[in-house]
Amino acid sequence: MKNRSKRYEKAAALVPAGKSYGLEEAVGTVKKFPAPKFDPTVTVSFHLGVDPRKSDQMVRGSVALPHGSGKNVRVAVFAAGAAAEAAEAAGAEFVGFEELIKRVQGGFTDFDVAIATPDAMTEVRKIARVLGPRGLMPNPKTGTVTDDTAKAIKEVKAGRIDYKLDKNGNVSGAVGKASFTEEALIDNARAFIDSVVRAKPPSAKGNFVRSVTVAASMSPGIPLESSVYTKSV
Image (cartoon, rainbow, N blue to C red; front, side):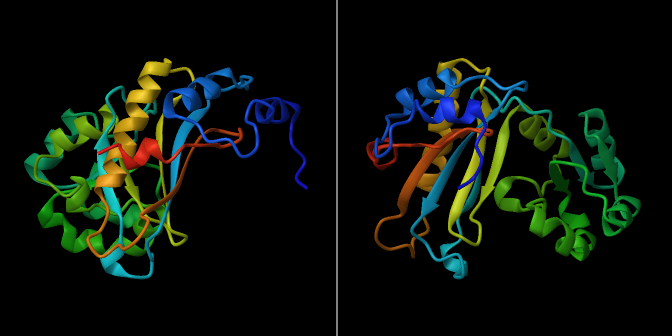
């Protein structure tokens, strides 16, 4: 048995065993949890009925949250010339090409999103072993490989989140902070749920979504009833 804090136990008492929730009720319950000394991140997590070992069953994508993520997103941009200048003007924290690649090769990964121009990708692929396991590798499917670096930076800082299936068949995304209004969290969660459901691979057979859970940092998960995601698109 894990030792749980009194705050966690009080939160768990609000989530009866075996009960599934509608999205509105789940978010309302999260808002009732005893508040810690920080603003918890609210996360929606899926367990999917796909095989992560098969490339044709990979689930990944991105979604713009209507009310932002509430997170200060640090952006690294691999670019040169005009694209690099545009990235600096747009507020990227780290901009560079060969020198930035060398920093990453040395272990620097103090950023949340990596963006690269198409012509920089030949060199950026050399650090895929560093960026890939951390979910930081630029990818055209998520809009992080582009010549329009300013637009990409604006989108990720405004609240666009990327998601990707892990080796256990799970996908998760942060949909805001517990301090957000219920309406904002519901809108953000619904946008994320809709996006993941639409990302079902054509080769995936049977029940695509096995379960969905809403949780706040250091708090119990709240299982959603199937109607939330089976009727979401």
